[in-house]
Image (cartoon, rainbow, N blue to C red):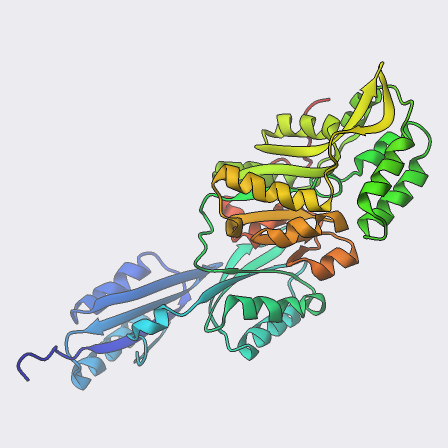
Amino acid sequence: MPGCAARTSTMLVSVFGRDQPEITGSLFRQLAAFDATVVDVEKMRTRDHITLCAHITTPKADGYVEGRLRAAVREWAVSRELHAEVTPGHGLDDESSYERQRSHVAVVGHPLTARTTAMISAKITGLGGTIERISPLARRPVTAVDFLVSGVDTKVLRTGLSAMAGEVGADLAISEAGLSRRARRLVMMDVDSTLIQDEVIDLFAQHIGCGQKVAAITDAAMRGELDFQESLRARVALLAGLDASVVDKVRAQVRLTPGALTLIRTLQRLGYRVGVVSGGFRQVTDYLAQHLNLDYNAANTLEIQDGRITGRLVGDIVDRAAKARLLAQYARESGVPLAQTVAIGDGANDLDMLNTAGLGVAFNAKPIVRAAAPATLSVPFLDSLLYLLGIPRAEAEVAQSHEVLVAH
């Protein structure tokens, strides 16, 4: 009828098989013969096999033309020893389908088993979600993949998957697809047992002969069994009389967590702000911040008088509430919305910070922290945080396998 828009034919062309030179261009030359318009296209390569899908329209809704197109695509596929399907694209031209809320579900396994993948997939489907795409993030030293999910609210997805996190044998992080994964972000890290492998106060205590006593108090505090401020003052009091030269010795003992340099260098190269907020001591975090070129650094300060540690602290204590407050402060200073902040830590004194951040990650944490944190990492490689952020291994600036801070 005059004035009516011409009807078009919508189809989905799917090709599967071994990748070959010029396969993409060759397929679209076949489609060009039918004056096809490309609405959407996606190609995924796994090892040497590919999946190539094209959502196309042709100028007329003509069964004869559609039949010829199907025959041409199938003949082309057979000639290249590929499998091809051409199916009606009912619903593909519905713009509302592109406006549904989408979420990213990053999964890190060590290893990632078929059982785990099945459980996660079933839960997503059970919550009303549709898995649109699964993309690889890393194959070693962990396996990490990203599920792109639509059809379910991100908060519902996060609640449902978090409830089963302990069962699936993998680490999960759920975020809105609308949040830019490449936008400027702020990443704040705890130091002791997170950025580094050690508890700094325990290292100091070893030099005065009360290492086991202090370590026991530290463990109880990190499990949330003791008030952090009281336990910290009690532990620091045991250091009274230590020669200030011990600070240099402790710095020399500090060991970065595997993957720490890779994580920090990659984040910095991508334009992220990176900092530390620690219940430990500025005497060590200043050193770390300088050599790692960190943007922010907050910690407690040991009082030193006449060349000796007094057993007291100077200034306000960086405790659980202070960590969350400092995260928000640094986000404002960086011009980064809280939704684009990331926090990672292992102890009970990190929980407020983890729950304030857009993404809070418990790293090899105590049970009370794992249960309350929005996301977890239970592998010994700190750079696995990259995968929870959707940054694939191919983009990581990999440091030496045995990472060192500097030559002491």
